[in-house]
Amino acid sequence: MAFVHVVLDGVADGALGVGLDVLAAAARIVDAGLVAHPRSSAPFAQRVLSIDGDPVRSGAGRSIAVDGALRRARLGADDVLVLPGLSASTERGVEALLARDDSVDTAAALARAAAKGARVAASCSATFVLASSGLLDGLEATTTWWLSAAFARRFSNVSLSARRMVIESGRVMTAGSAFAHADLMLALLARVGGATLAERVARYLVLDARPSQSRYMALEHVRTNDPALRSLERFIVENVHRQLSLDELARAARLSTRTLARRVRAALGMSPIELVQTVRIRHAAHLLESTRESVQSVSERVGYADAAAFRRVFRKVIGESPRAARAKLPRPSRAS
Image (cartoon, rainbow, N blue to C red):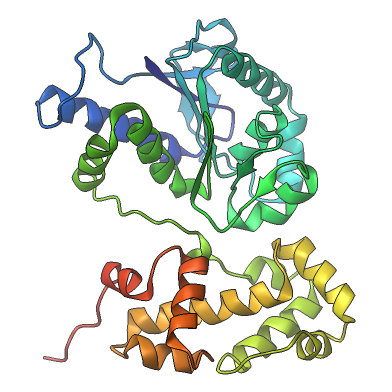
């Protein structure tokens, strides 16, 4: 079995580095006998391949040497192909990426490897290359949150769940923004090496589990493009302490309810009511991080009289309970 890091021009230096480090740590832990694992001559062997075997230029402009050519590699059912995130950060950048010959050839090579039984995975904007191979058709996937609307428009036959950090659909995995590549590698490691090994590596590298991207979502990229959504978000923030109806949201944006729903869906990949929930829960997560208020008090401050309902929505948006989320966040220090 081998892990193959598939790199294209524009690969994110950090994502590739963390992928290499996760597997190197796994190999050291197995070699030290800290986790029981079937011995092999090269546990968690890994290679870095480009489509043609030539070095690639990273997103930071560095030349990255590779170990060979993907198009000539002999791959089988025991192999895992992983695409680290790429520097394409806008819809226009993604369109340019997918039009490149190396992207087209890489997508075809992924499809051939998957047909032989190999696992295939990608994170951040590299999920677009994976989706263009057809391997995600009819399956559930995630991508980086700020490109989710573009992904949904381009790949309408993929069931997109952009709030989630990592999604496994059979032998294909996808992950969110660039440093979700760490989450992706740990998920892959759990599949091929066992949950205990993945947990040991996470502890060794101090990598915390983050089941959702929602905590990290921001709307700044939308504000410059859509004044109606800018007005809408301002209205939601100003009224975060209470329930809001769809009619109120439409009036704040000066749009019909139907047009509002269409514009929010196109920009953010969610409904207006889901947007309200996301803003309120983001504010709640901030309060949990920055204050010592109880969960009940925080729920009331963001418009939930029923703490149980607040916990359900918080778990849906963030991916874990308020108490679990607070336990992972830095606590404010006491004045000395």
